[in-house]
Length: 221
Image (cartoon, rainbow, N blue to C red; front, side, top):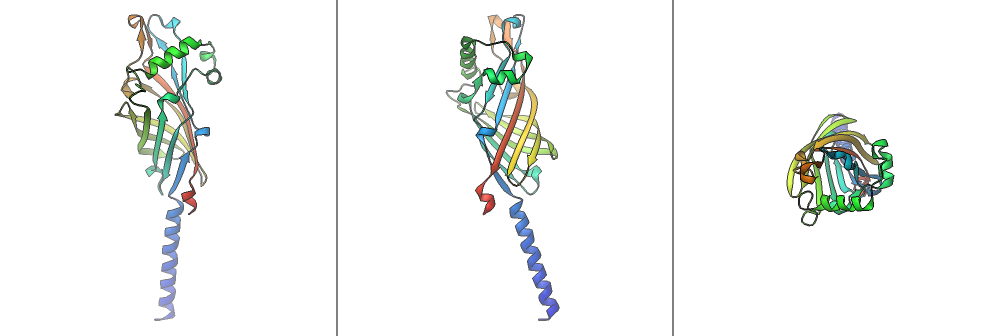
């Protein structure tokens, strides 16, 4: 074998090794950090008697899941899980973050009533369906601003929701945050109503979120 042939084989091997190393480094897994991730749902009263209702902030700070980042980030997989019992209703500190629309104090009686309605059979039916799951299907756009087409599983039924996101991605951190609106119907739900429908929850819900995760130990192997 000539020296030239040996060099060609050596360079080919080195190129192959470099490509494999790059593939490993760009296929990473992140675990969602519960302490740094949150979801807020803003719900507003509607109907002729809406002045007797309250603007509600329903928040969640116990989100679990993982993110698998592919070589092409747009092919990444995001999987989240939320226990419905962990939703917090009208936490005063969270309400304050949402500004003047949520300055009005909500009594503990009203908070307890909202929780009962939310977890009841007509809405989330928490006793039978204790979790909500969110799985990404398609990610469109160009980082950092993308649209995530996600499957949201509520009460065992799948619903397709488009979630806009601004994504920050490094070797050590994944973060996605954004805001979007959906109707109850988009999620297979019916707005709560009282007084013969004169007081209801507005069909349109506002979602705000920030999801962050740290790199898995698997990335370092």
